[in-house]
Image (cartoon, rainbow, N blue to C red; front, side):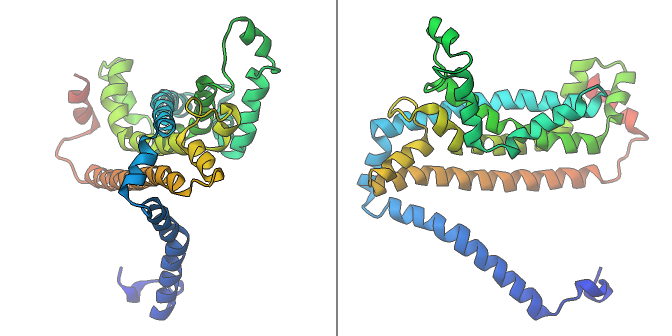
Length: 299
């Protein structure tokens, strides 16, 4: 559609569009690019040697290892839960379906600090299960298990919320066609459903991983902030900053900033590949019908 064919409300003067573009770019520069650049400037202000020393310091390495451990556990658990929840919600009708959707959205509406306090109430020394845990010499709050549970709580909606609208839009016609061709449940999932949702699944995994590594509020409550033991990277940055070790704090923060940049690049790559996949899927095909397309996939 040419500019002349656009509706009247879309034919703003060039200067209006220019002002809007400048405002958008100015906002991004002021609130995104400048703070991000400031992190790296402060991190390297005293040179490479101090930067590397702050990263390889034992407490910093322990925080990095713990952050990677939490993400390595939270991501696959959320992938399994997200796919299972999206499959159940989009493919079946059952009582309590809307309640399940509400539970999935719960971490989006509850403050992470409140979520951390809930885990303290449940598993703390004075919590509901605190006595039983002490009797069996188990520790959740102020230990690694509590950090993992808190991270799981705040990250589990991401994969499910990416897949549910995608699978609802795709419908179940292909799965039903595969079923009529003799495919069993695993064949339908691996050869029909999973290829259709792979880009949405990867997109949700990227967001989930980034949130797991960057979470602060919930893990701050349940970790106890024990240096070298229960401090993630975000908590380690806060401790260093409160101790006026600004160069070390910004050095560790630069790793989180790099994670954000990598996440942004990965997100754009996934969106680009998904757009290409949707464009290719919309092209005319040479086979006579959907059954012919599905049959080789489940054979």
